Length: 329
Image 1 (cartoon, one colour):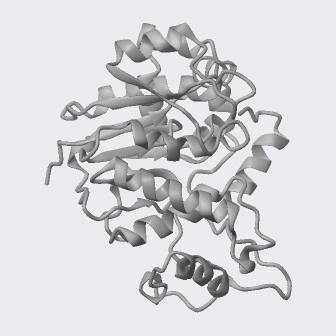
Image 2 (spheres, helix red, strand yellow):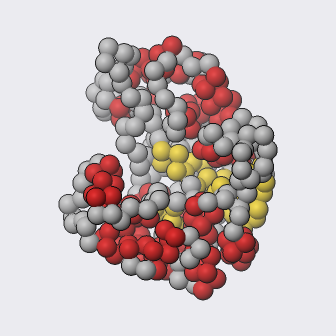
């Protein structure tokens, strides 16, 4: 099954994300030649919710993104901004063409295979299952997973029981619908974006009592995403496994984690995407990419780990890299 008719959106702004966007788009062009949709690079504009101008600051990155065929769109933050930049992935969706299927990707992602061979069903949204049980954080004598999640479903009149994965026991975090927001998709960005905004703002401003002790920073988008996906007839199994966060894409998050834990093929994909001169010129402006990709720090991190026996928790991988004095973000 080949799915060609969809758009991609990423958010790029001053700082690390603008360089990640260049690497993302270069990897897409190298590894997904069948993709003919638009790649929207969404750029937040200066406004009262930003202390500093968030737009792309590197002309080298802007030129590289133009060269790679990006379509730039600007959006205004009306609900989030500098205090919660993760809200950009929520608010940018309103600027996309309505009624055209889309896939959102975090910029810290590599496209390593043909994206048009991913069997998306855009009528049934889903998102990344490459996650750990980061939310909620249960307090001693406080409400459990069921009480916390059910209060959110009840808040929006959604059926809680049908969201559960009954193959996992009660009060185990995987029983409850939970995603990483590194990618998500749907048939219409306006419908998805409006609902994501509505739910996120209401949760932030009027949290249920069961959530009184819970933090939403940085998890608000990931708290909201399951509710939106469930409300639009999506699910965790709407997308077959093995494609995104598998052979087709790699959400590496930080360069040290890419070199520390990802497969050799993903590192080869990264370095090939970073090799063209115009891309190299832009990426070398960023100290982390310069040192990891071009100056050998990535290999030093790689040598810290037995790839057949990696630590199970991301925190352990981070700590080993930091202990060696090699961490950079």
